Length: 373
View 1 (cartoon, rainbow, N blue to C red):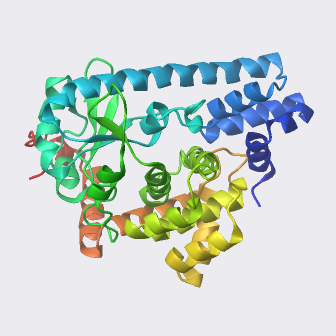
View 2 (cartoon, one colour; view 1 turned 30 degrees about the vertical axis):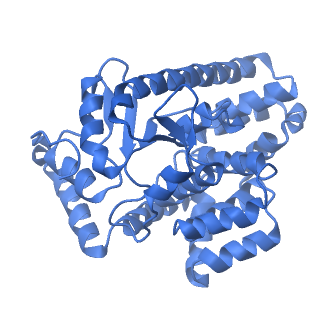
């Protein structure tokens, strides 16, 4: 069971009226813990929608987070229009991923959500043209040393991040969902084929609802970055609640689609932890079928259950145990293990350690050719 501070936040996110019984000290802790989980905007949005009275000195923090979320949503829409203008001449599908897809698809989880970068998926054989078009539109690579450029272009599922020189917006350009060296290889063509048009925003598209859920889960349980763990798990919970009643035979379709994309293992973890930590309404029979299709062995599962049960909680002193830093580090190592075979992983970690000791190695900033080598 989560620590009391995390448990209170999770309960109030699902049942905002429970906040009416909080003392001032509990309100202050609630907002602080929500910041640690990057869900303070979501908390503010849900409390406002429920009409819960919030103490004035607490409410200003929640209102500020909701207003920031609204500005970020408008910024995402603006950036989407700019991306469409920059890439329209290439005549290729451009699929928005994660947060930007939630906004352009008007999915409820986008309301109150705080955003980082913008992610898109494009065909791999068009990467060079896409990168040149983005450079012409005022974007530049955020990774300048030659090793990082090679790391992304040769092994990863995306180009090095790009930053708009005028607006500071960060753009991640993916050509598939997982690194080329990963043990799982979802076919991006299947995502393009199932993606949905955005009227008036061609060539931009968003993933199908099933793919939106599966990618959100895969991103959380493969990247090894848990500073947004509770926010991303809240996304998964909200996506499932939103789509489960509107898609015929939803659960069977979701399990089948994950199998088709070779992503049954992360789907199992996503369903398990959404149910365990957030109370997402997932039928026991569905969890059993997901486990049969993608659960790790019993020893590995017990280990992951303990590690992820710690790492998915807000990054906040009231939620951390003595074991939490170790759990997050072990999961970071696991993410790299999933990302690369052992010989490449050893070489990569050795190189990064060397660059940490001798930072002048990282000053090599020879420009890289657009696209993959």
